[in-house]
Amino acid sequence: MDAATTTTPAVLILLGPPGAGKGTQARMLEDTFGLVQLSTGDLLRAAVAAETEAGLAAKAVMEAGDLVSDEIVIAILRDRLDEPDCAKGVILDGFPRTTVQAEALDGLLSENGQKISAAISLEVEDAEMVTRISGRYTCAGCGEGFHDTFKVPAVEGKCDKCGHTEFKRRADDNAETVASRLAAYHAQTAPLITYYESHGVLQRTNAMGKIEDIANDLKNIVGHAMS
Ligand code: AP5
Image 1 (cartoon, rainbow, N blue to C red):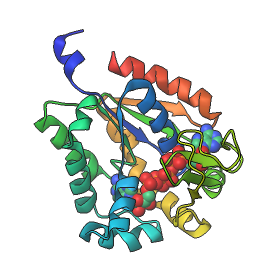
Image 2 (image 1 turned 120 degrees about the horizontal axis):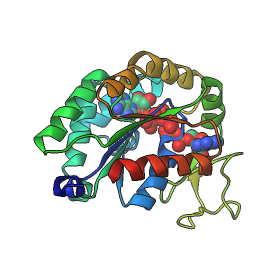
Image 3 (image 1 turned 60 degrees about the horizontal axis):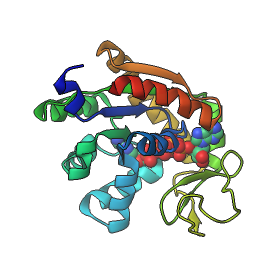
Image 4 (image 1 turned 90 degrees about the horizontal axis):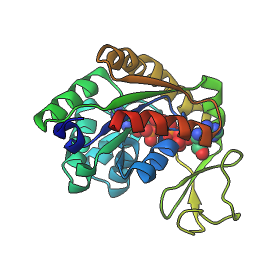
């Protein structure tokens, strides 16, 4: 192992359709490896709530289940990557989603002397994603994710992570929007699996099992990619 390998921050990508478990697994990896989760979905939802120019442009697109423009998303991600905490290494959750975004990321990383440690494809059947998304809710305090059936709080009505007692559901987690989000994934994001395979950084994992089993598989993949 050379010095450059040990000092260059890790850059991990979680690829996968809506509801594949990217956010759930990214938060677990963040805790295990001391990395920073960067979710472009969360960054865009924050921009929508703050009514920034980007947020106002993104709102209707997100509600329709389409992809926000590459220009807006790349600008948001670039600003976030410049923040000091990202020097610890990052897990990209929901970015890139198009070939244009993937190429922009390669450019941003190479400017900083960084490269992608691994792009991990979470592989799930479409029907399972609808079940996962329709039962999803998150803690209004810390954003921890839960599910009506698959991940309920240990104490009913109380977040396991921060103890908050209020929860929320996303506006785009409805049947029509989920269908559009899946279509956008298959048309625009799934080709990135081949993109990263051809760059020699692709890892595939079966994401149909239990959350804890998938977390263990990912821990092995990420541990290896960071060694
Ligand atoms: P975004 O917020 O990224 O949503 P998404 O990709 O649709 O993914 P989700 O957050 O819905 O799912 P997830 O894979 O994180 O699953 P989770 O862990 O929550 O994007 C939203 C919108 O923003 C997009 O539609 C687009 O408009 C825009 N956008 C964002 N990034 C963009 C970009 N780069 N370019 C352009 N536009 C962009 O899990 C789901 C549920 O299942 C949870 O309840 C969880 O508890 C449960 N669960 C997780 N794993 C399991 C398991 N193994 N078994 C059972 N249940 C499980």
